[in-house]
Image 1 (cartoon, rainbow, N blue to C red):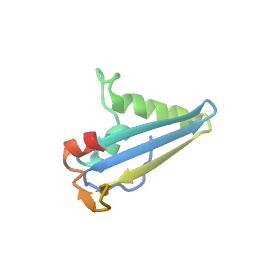
Image 2 (cartoon, rainbow, N blue to C red; image 1 turned 45 degrees about the horizontal axis):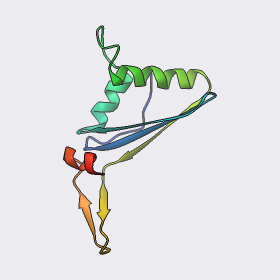
Image 3 (cartoon, rainbow, N blue to C red; image 1 turned 135 degrees about the horizontal axis):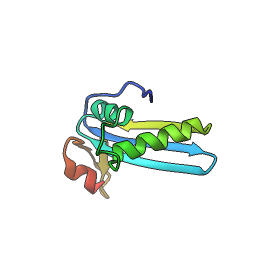
Length: 102
């Protein structure tokens, strides 16, 4: 079973970088509750869910680790945007439109 670092229950983005003998792959995801999403990756579900992202990512991470590779995770729960005028403003990562805009 996969083990993840402590994750916040907050909204945000996550990035998994999988490095192995066949190269590097990156998966970027978003979630309203990152900790819950990580639980889905750890235990992806039962029959009939074999084609979902959580199942595929779980298998990819396990295969990478068994093959001697490395999986790194980065989490962002805060972000800001900068305008051409030099001003910065916080982005609300709980709003899906922010994920699509960034």
